[in-house]
Image (tube, rainbow, N blue to C red; front, side, top):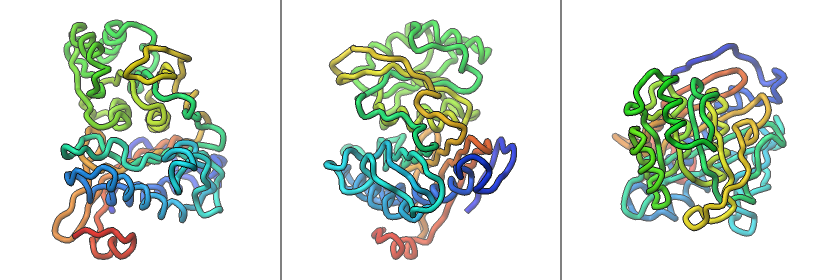
Length: 337
């Protein structure tokens, strides 16, 4: 396993005053997202979305129960009546370690019946107990995500063109050079026209918006901001990642079906979605996206790429892992044949 690391302002042990939510726990959690991504990756391109999702959930559940924490699932795979594991309110971890809120996405945006879908990843967000917003009463959110330099110059309630001009000014580029990530959904046709009429470029996201939202805060990212309506649960998970990078997510709650209703609710910011000083975020790519490379199988080995982030200490790691398939199959019961 190799890792690249940026922005570290210090390293501390588990008992550093941050409730145990530190880089040590984050590196335990990345094993969980790696397992989920490998399990889902087996099904990429086979046109069987349900099997890929089920495999990812099973792998994530198996490994997260061994992690040193006392976690409570705030965002999971549905209510207890919907799924036997990783449901909202479920206890996760080995019962020892920090008490925390957990948000899970086992293969968000993963598998299309038509083939591979970009922006597929497995992700885990962790915050102090009671610090993570419960999105269950809300189906979707209108979202605006930006990187650290643009946090104070945008407003989700302003017209699209005004926000694009503000971002262009901060980045010292023309509006025509600004790239906006937007989920490729019928509900966004008018938004896409607005962005292009303002002179900016549109980058369509086919899978999900977690990777697209977090990518706006990475220095090498091909996108400058994210706009559009997406899932409320994914918004909270993305907010955790952005909080670790100094970026921001602004949302307007949408209580109804985003394809049918234009009703708008309360405006929330990053700190409303994920509070507290200590936040962790881990994700592993299933298929390739702007944030991470996908799972690759070759010569009896499986490689993954993950991002591991902590808000305290301020750390971002890109981790490349390589495993022998035979040993991993035996460990998790994943058949690579």
